[in-house]
Image 1 (cartoon, one colour):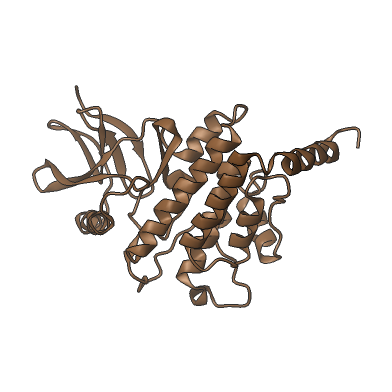
Image 2: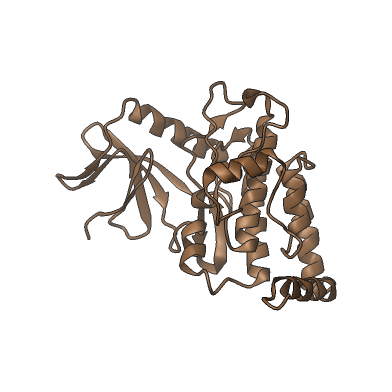
Length: 282
């Protein structure tokens, strides 16, 4: 079985390894002596070594993508060997299954998994710097794992390397761009990831990035009234949580209520009201 090119991202190339269970992430993609793709950038080996270092610090965790270290794919050329996500990334999965969303229970469990992975990451003093559903990988039984630590840093970033998508970026709120606390930026982005999973769409998906930026600057965010975990999402956006572990605890409590049926009647009423408000006859 030969290596297969899976995709070329903003900073790396990913190929399916010939074992069928892992992928190779690097700046050159090789199949034997054949060069499949190349990214001509300086410092690629150093960046891969940094990402490998982050994975080593994180260790094994059920909601962190597993890394098997650096492998030489060609003389003096290395790639990271990572476990392969059979369902791809969460954003692609949502887009490919737009009209058939997973159950609320499954989505809530996905949100819990993401939060658990981020909480573990922060406990190891790792800042991801690019939390997004495109960097969340989906496995059987809808297990979500946090991946793509190419922008991550060990401890507080000493350079301007945080690169959130606009829908995941904490507004300035009177602060300088660099004055926003790193953890608050991460938790705001986590709230957007939870929204994307629970609402089955990106925040303000119908708008362009410039319009989203203007809305966020004006403190206008998507309505979460009819979204399970909406209060948690809003509290992430409003900077009310101090840690990802606090968010994890809040989701666990919500999950327990949801499983016990304690939320059924209020949620049914809320959903009926939402249906009425969005009805063409209204």
